[in-house]
Amino acid sequence: MHSSRWLARVVVILGLLVPGLCRALAPLPVPPPDENDRFHVVLPRPGWGGKIDLKWNGPPLLAATVEGEPKRFVKSWNAVPGRRRTRIWVANVEGWEFPAQASFEVLRSTRQYPDGRWTFRLEDAKAAPVSRLGVELYTWEFEATRSGNYTVEVLGSSWMEQTEAVEVQVGGRVRTGQLDFTTSTALVGCKTIGRLRIAQAGPQTIRLIVGEPGRIRLGRAMGVVLRPAPEGPRNRPGSDGEYLLESGTAALQGTGLGFTEVAGAKRVSGWTEPGAALGWEYDDVKPGAYAVHIGWRAWGGAPEHLEVETLRQKVRIVPEATGGEVRWAQAGEITVQRMADIPLVLRASGRISGKDWEVVGVRLVPRSPVGPVNAAGAAPEGR
Image 1 (cartoon, rainbow, N blue to C red):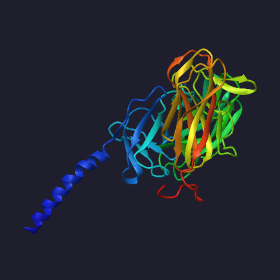
Image 2: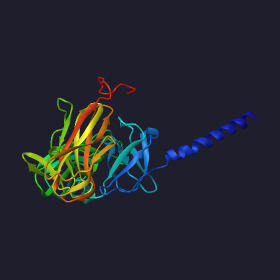
Image 3: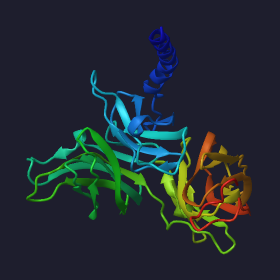
Image 4: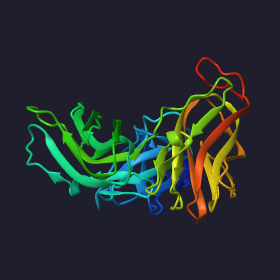
């Protein structure tokens, strides 16, 4: 009698738990990638071992951004039809809570995207004959649309508890680094190895070298990314706590964007594409509320909106013609909860009217602190 009651209770408990467990194990639906081969999902709390399955059977995942911050330690298993789903591993990622907004890029082909990013796939490279001993050499030819700074990223893996040497060369400039240990060839990660500058527009050659002479290779690369990087140093606040993010120091995230010199200052013009953007990085932002001001000038056209996004917060203005004069307008306020290094993006959105307008920059003006900052750079609990 007692055993039958116990068994009945077990059956009831399993009946309650199994549907939820099945939902937790079901792959996370993935929307179609956008024009930049990027898709956006909300990550639930990961399961055992920090792993999340994605319902994605397309090209390899290239890079991950969580809550607006690039995450080097998000790694992925590529899907194998009938054997393995695409899976991401977020066990080593800290500094964010679930559910979390995440973006993933896809390594589909060798090309430049509307946001200015270049991707180079190994299948499209000219490869030198290789063996297990020594180095692999891959070469691509491409046409740079403008000069500029780029962050260099390599997608790959390394095994047997060792890293693997990689080197990227563009226009006589060299950046070296290492592929992180990822436990197996099936698990890959995207690694930033530095920044370099393309000196001028025109034909370019990029080379990727994997391994070291006279040593058995213990890693492999799958592709390279050149991502537009800020043209100036990382931004720090003035003595009054205000940030001035000038357009001449931004990363140009759009193939049509370029700099113009006005009275010794750089402005950004060429806003012909919806979604074109400027990107900055600013350091050691203290907790508090900040008013966001956008500067522009226009004498024959303007976008429908100029929008600033940072920390999952968006504010925007409706720019008007200024007769060629510089004008600043407050777009709204953002709140910073903890001290951090924060990326900020300004983009043109909606209908683009004409080409005769420029962006001057963005100002962040402190309004009020969230609370006193402790030695760890965070606001006290409960604030």
